[in-house]
Image (cartoon, helix red, strand yellow):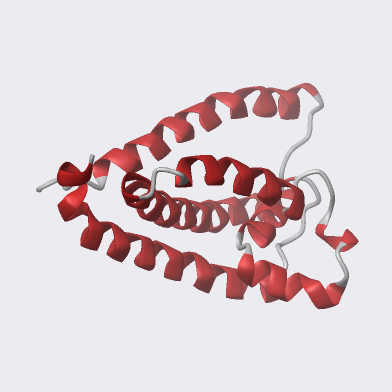
Length: 162
């Protein structure tokens, strides 16, 4: 099997994945300490995580090559991440967003239903909101495909530019 250059951005995602696994150990220990047993809804974590990885790989592939050609993207990404943190339901529930804004926000920022899907699946024994997760899943797959296409088309000149 031939490995292409896309292994380098994906390797960076793998490093973050390892960090996430290490950070999940105390989370699991808290489950044991407080004798909290997740129910069968915990299996929703698998498709949520697969969609999260598809979105992350697509963004990582596209932004890695674009940052070679446009060096200022590295600084812009930090600002976008900060804004993304505040418009994603990390510190607040999705229910605090008016219902008319949830679907458009889920399409523009597919991390919204992904992040909000983990919470009910793990903690509240409920399945994620499928009305928001469906369009977000399509967006995740499209972003992964577009990211791969952008990477493959722009990787040729990386050695010349870098």
